Image (cartoon, helix red, strand yellow):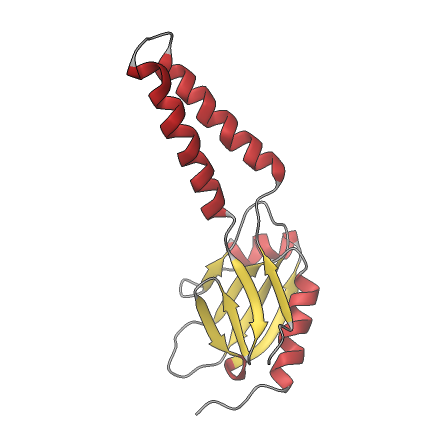
Length: 156
């Protein structure tokens, strides 16, 4: 049974949950505005659960290095195609996603997470030059990719 060399989930911080529910409640109060009947309860029953669902979806991204592959949400790539994993701080992430960005790069970034990892790809069948993946601990993720790459099988 293979174990994860690295795994994390990009959850939302508590304050974003608070802001999201607060905005949904404020909007529900605006729609209600003292009206009676269905307009009194329907905005609260619809808007607050929708906000919670949207917040849950925003914090569902999982990153894992397992079984010789890097998994980012639904995307995955064999580590045999990875040539380098570079941990980035907030300034490096901003530079890579700003003026240094490549239009074919695969990016999974969350603005509430400062760090990221640039995963350089060398796959002749794929024009993607690199992946940029947000991470709360980019050094550990880069080390996990490098460690797992040593034992990854060669591509067929």
